[in-house]
Image 1: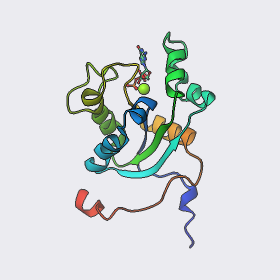
Image 2 (image 1 turned 60 degrees about the horizontal axis):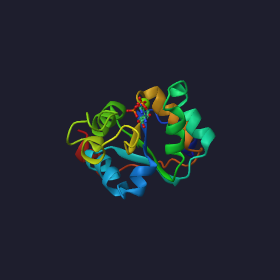
Image 3 (image 1 turned 30 degrees about the vertical axis):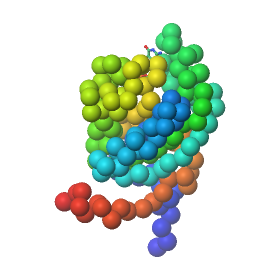
Length: 160
Ligand code: GDP
Ligand code: MG
C-alpha cells in the first residue's frame, strides 16, 4: 500500500515551538533550535514566517481580554518568526521546561528564557502548554504537507 502518511496527523506527541521576532532579530535562531535538537526531539516542521495579525489573534485568543493583548499582537507581528513542530514522547512538557518561566527574570538559568531574555514582553520563544494545544497550534501555523515525514538515524541511540 502506498503511504499517504503526509496527510495524516502524527500519533506521537508534538508541540508547536516558535522563535518570536525578538529572537530572530537578536540572532538567537541557531542557539534556540540547537537546544531542542541536542535534547533529542525530532524536528518535523520549520519555516521563517511573517505572521499576519488575524493569525496572531487566533493563536493567543485565550489572552484577548488581558491588558497586554494589543502589545502582544504588535510584538508577534513585528517581524518574522520561526515556526517549528517538534515531536517525541513527553515533548510538550519537556519543551516548556527547556523554555523556562514566562517571566525571564524568574526563569531558571539553563533555560532558554533564563539564559537569553530579561522581560515577559520580550521572552524570545513560545511553546504549547498541552498536547491538545500542540495539535491545535501546529494546525494553525502549518499547512497540510508542510510537515516532513522522516526518521532520524539517531533514534535507536536515543530511545531503547
Ligand atoms: P507562556 O505560555 O509562558 O508563553 O505565557 P502565557 O501563555 O501566559 O502568555 C503568552 C505570552 O504573552 C507570553 O509568552 C508573553 O509574550 C506575553 N505575556 C504574558 N503575560 C504578559 C504580561 O504580563 N505582559 C506582557 N507585556 N506580555 C505578557
Ligand atoms: Mg501560553
